[in-house]
Length: 186
Image (cartoon, rainbow, N blue to C red; front, side, top):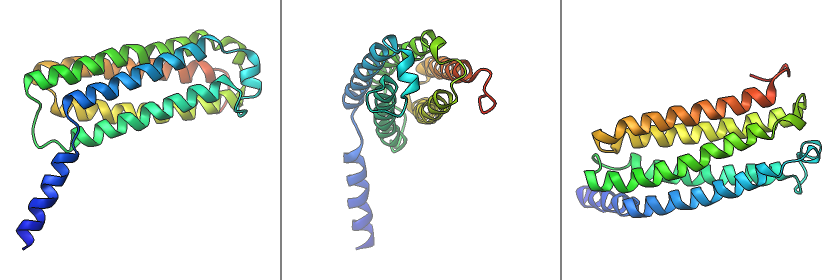
């Protein structure tokens, strides 16, 4: 009886795993959210920093978008981590195409936040909010990168490593630039 229960649980876990196409679709959703965040970052004004906690602040829209990206990234991570073995070459390609496309767009979120930073120089509430949001984002995206690194085809591992490093550098730059000159900054 115990063996049958384990078999049912294993089958349920495997059926809950996302297919490479489902993962690719989640990356597409993440890419669309990143695009919306870019649009909001390009429209940031000083009043968005002054009223950072107001629902009408564009920062709040960006933070909500980043939270949704992190939720989707965590879903992908859980699914990939649960895989019993490495992806086949063709499945790895499907996953990597989605990851590469989304990550390029997400790096643009960071780039546009950096371009928009000038009106918020020295604003501790903005520094703190950016630092908190981007730090959570880094944790989720790093987990995703590690999960992919362990399961993609060997030939794709270098690309995952390069993407992880690029996202990490951009995210750290945003935190550093928004918190420059503020004691609680990094």
